[in-house]
Picture 1 (tube, rainbow, N blue to C red):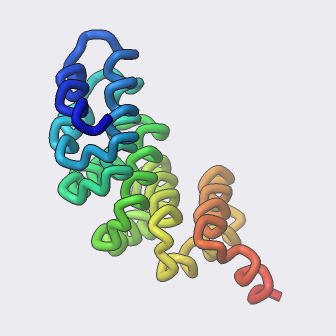
Picture 2 (picture 1 turned 60 degrees about the horizontal axis):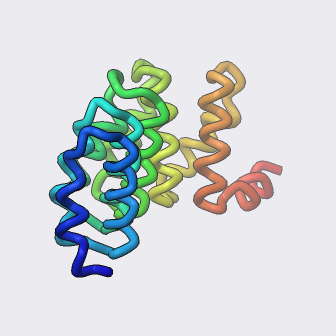
Length: 171
């Protein structure tokens, strides 16, 4: 059980991807918050099969110290969309409202890289950032916006459970 967590944490640097993934899963199951700093080291891993579970683990274990790094992943053009969305999920788990204003600014800027606008919209939904709802709705209604971005806006509004009220408001 939980007393084995420090031993399991010793497996985090293992060379085998599956061993590292299972170690992360076990530490989440044990709620081993005290070992979150060890898991945090893995979010720099080159191996996305380890990196993504580590990112989610930081959210699950409520490791608030990871917020700046997770925010940087969400807004980094060098990250793939899937990893950025995973970091958005973790920000949502951490209820990292302090990132909302910066995410909104990036989302609103038309010159922001399209994939970054998608990941910021996604993260805003996961953060339940209702203050972003009007911007997301505007994107949804703007026909010359990228279709994937519009769909991401729908998902974000759905995450906020605002789609129904938004549709009623538009009639």
